[in-house]
Length: 377
Length: 176
Image 1 (tube, rainbow over the protein chains, first blue to last red):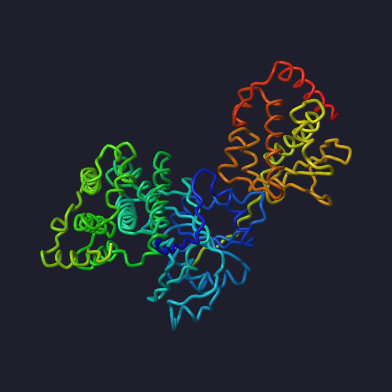
Image 2 (cartoon, chains in turn cyan, yellow; image 1 turned 180 degrees about the horizontal axis):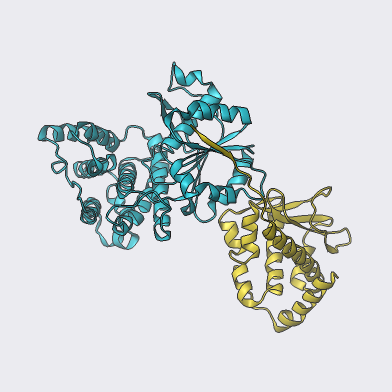
């Protein structure tokens, strides 16, 4: 009997050349003519808002651009939006910009008092205002997930996912290598875990795409970086497309994390980050998730039903076809280990490849091992 | 303190002028080809009488309107869609995307594959209009440009490539 599977992704993802040119049409389809653009100083300084302005030429859109300069701007944003009669939100940036945009959307639709004293932050019913997400950096997947944090409260709802995500190389900014690695490895871990352990065909197809995007771009990007020193300026042409692809993978991992909030690698990553005495760039959340992924896959070789198939997105069809079926699970884990080893070699400061090297005690490793087991694959 | 500014998107006048000229000439060429070329004639013959279609860009044009009257004659009806019943809209989602097609950076099938245009009307007639557009582009453009504009450059007989093409050009310029 066929199992019942659900997968909700309410975000329309536009990726590639001239993807931004579709935005005016897509916004008009949601009855939005006056979008309120929230961006950060780095994107503003790099002139990314001009790319958006060019896409709005010869259309009816009349956007307003607000640049976040400090955390106390929320009330100003709220009053600007209401006073000037905007009808939709565009988050042009990553991280804080998107979280602010989601919180603003909540405040506008449910009232600002809902953010101040959320009686039941988990229950947000009804559609919010149209929200468009245009990233400028790869991130960890939180931006496209249906959750946001504001004033220490966490709000979770599918309505918080952006309506449209436009990922294009034109808006990509240079990113420090540590952030690229964090994003790539966390996306890889989330997508690999879902692909290997979930029987949900919709989730597995998203995960397949996410794994392919990371495997295509992460290592070349790390090898291109000038000793990890990609400062926040407009990224070079040769880096923009791989950065956009990695951002696409992060967006996909966000959709997956919204549907699978209890991913083992994510829980273990958070656990390791909390345990480690001094979390630094060398032990980011993404790296912790990647270490946890290897551990999880090693532990579950015999029980994991689709681990062998994971070799296909990790490599390519020719390589996959050349490995006999029984050897595919080992080969898949080996490919992930080789990727971590190759990344290790490209980094000047190195990075841990095992829990031991990450500085965890045997007791802590045992705790994490207990966390990394699937009772029902 | 939040820094705020209102963006005035403005208009790209040179691109609009280029597109208006191209669509105007293209519309006249469709009218001319419908009179002299059997391929275009047969595509229009399959369309109902008093059928009008437009090609343009969302949200405010420019547009090209072509119609077939009750006697079966095909006419270029100008660039205005106001006060007119349009049976088939073929619209690019942004004037910049229409410009990419009419500057031969992207062919119509590629633009379609990239979800750059939408159709409001019957799909079979939209397919017929695309076939007409392909034929007219082959008539109007030199081979190296036409290859970029259509999916597959057709192997036409010599008469169609030379005599009919010349007739289409003359009639398009003369508005016949």
